[in-house]
Length: 158
Figure 1: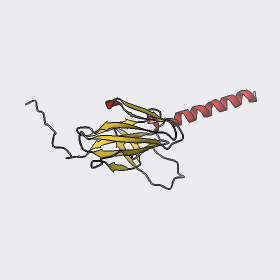
Figure 2: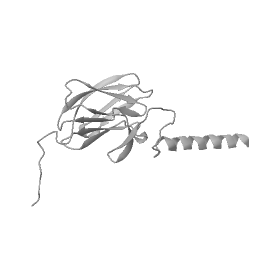
Figure 3: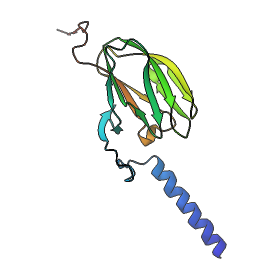
């Protein structure tokens, strides 16, 4: 009878850990002395690990992929600006950089790096994610700086 109880306890613990992996908890482990802020990207609240203005960058822009966040989390640029990203996986597990709207999906193994080109939206933000860890808050964004382009148009039905 004790063997069956042990199996039930182990199965129960596995369920608890599986549910916690993609749960809605917004707290991080209390061991870190680094303070983070939270931000909302695409309707999801995530921990922000920095914002970088790349509107005047001419070379490559580095994004580090950790377990389980992007640093910086938000890149700000000019509407329509193209940027070459250097993606470095500093984490202990494989990650992706996925920007569905631009058909970008790069898988990066631990310790590896790759490059990809992205284009800032005409206005607002484009969300990028790690498809493996999106449910754990591994989400970032490309944001067009307000007033960074004069090419905006207004359409009216009247």
